[in-house]
Length: 482
Image 1 (cartoon, rainbow, N blue to C red):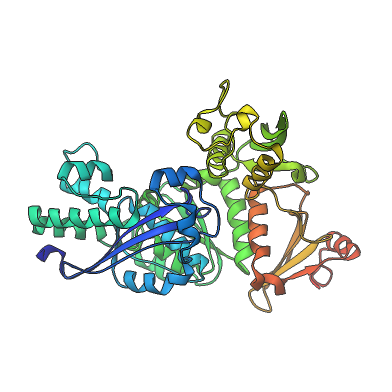
Image 2 (tube, rainbow, N blue to C red):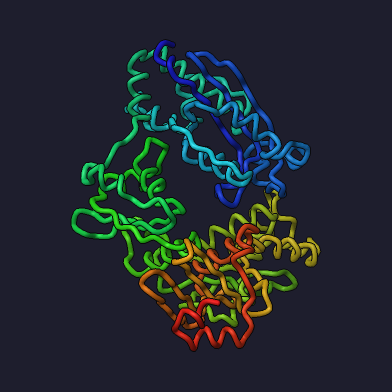
């Protein structure tokens, strides 16, 4: 095991309530701490996600609602998990998945987490390139590993330790070389100079990566531009997109802002106006897909509709807003599984009689009229709570003001989730812009997150109607900024 010495490894596997690291939660975790080529500590526990887990998850993992309800929350065991991961290479199969969930759980608890990552899928491909499949089940079959409970976190993590030991015995120093290759930190991109990075501002704002032909590659934002840009080129685990960005960037443009809200709004605006190649998922499409409430007899259902935009007066009637029909159907499919809704009633299946989910025991019989409609409709409404446009929490317009210092301020007037105008004050004077009221999905998400954070309360004040009218009518600092 000489090739595994010199580094600490934390072999991690998580079971989750769904596939979204931002929306779903970890419900079980298994960790093996490896030091000097030996397993020195093992850890396993179910975790309470604070919500119901779907029958589909139970059927896949065997983890029941009773198990997670009696388990500690992630925050309860955070210190222990942090200790086990401290200073170790984060090892997981499809590491991006597990790492994203762990990082988001730390974030919810108010802590940061960063580690070098080693993906055992990539390692398996490097060590055995002739093998066709590198999923965990195929690895178990190929090498004859024992796994008592597939899709349970600790048992799956134990398989990865077996895999590392097998590679160490079989390949020796070659394994160590491949691990170092996968963990190797990247330095300054070949098309950039080190001075380009040293001179970056360290305050809030937006950065734009350009390619050697002058094309916009990527727009990002941060409360510390320099730290965020450097993280694109660090040895921390990155997605394929970030690797490609780091390879192609030839020039960096930065635009400093008064605060994080200003940076978020500027980032959203720039993505829609200059269409950076690697921000495709955020580029404004011509149409949105909205879900409206409909009925299938007594049972609540939905109708999907393509629309060019949403009028401010209409968004209260919408169950959910999606960027594409595929995204809408994917959410509805997951919501049906998690909340035991009938896919036939929801329009996802064109069958007669019982739907397929009813045959599996997931649907509770709405397709055959066996379930009480009131009970079903309550679960239906709960399923869309996360996608529903929230009620505006103020009786009228508000002003949000961010200050970089006494000379630089940026104010935004907002009503019913619509940006009505903004004013920027700096050493060059006042820049004032009035905006036509329109409901913008990206701005809505930005404003909703901002207003939920208690730390931002001090920057928000209600705006009387007469003051708002003066705001629109005036273009001088004294009238715009009070």
